[in-house]
Image (cartoon, rainbow, N blue to C red):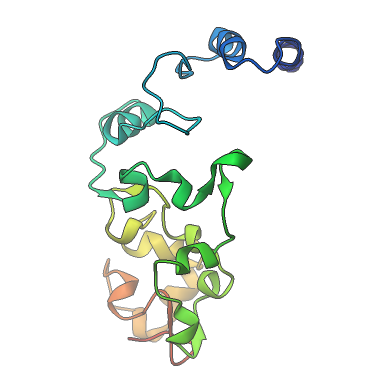
Length: 183
């Protein structure tokens, strides 16, 4: 496997900077490499326009209903968030990038939830699409119990009879006025 990878790298470097040559080499090794001569690339972009439905279905090889699409992603405005000249790196680090359009929670709450305070929006939210509201990467208790220890959470007397009630019914996932982030 490693030898194959090295061989591919050598071939790419020897082929020069031609996108057509790169396509020939990459498509030999990988399926789904967009053909640069296909003519359906967006003007000025180096990536193929994304059909979000087929992309979601092909990504996991099963039908997926992506009902929530982040507007820049849906509108194929990748450069709103990504620097097209730097291989798609974010234009601004999180959370600054997110706060260009969304509320800065540091101005709303005395106490911030850990990922919010650390500027890690994508720990809980998908930046492109999701089947869940608010682009959440998980739903219900799974969203919180992915990081928080289930045994410790359920040991709290307030949580004894919550069943499968979602944590966000009582807790604000972004912040609050105390350490419990109660609504």
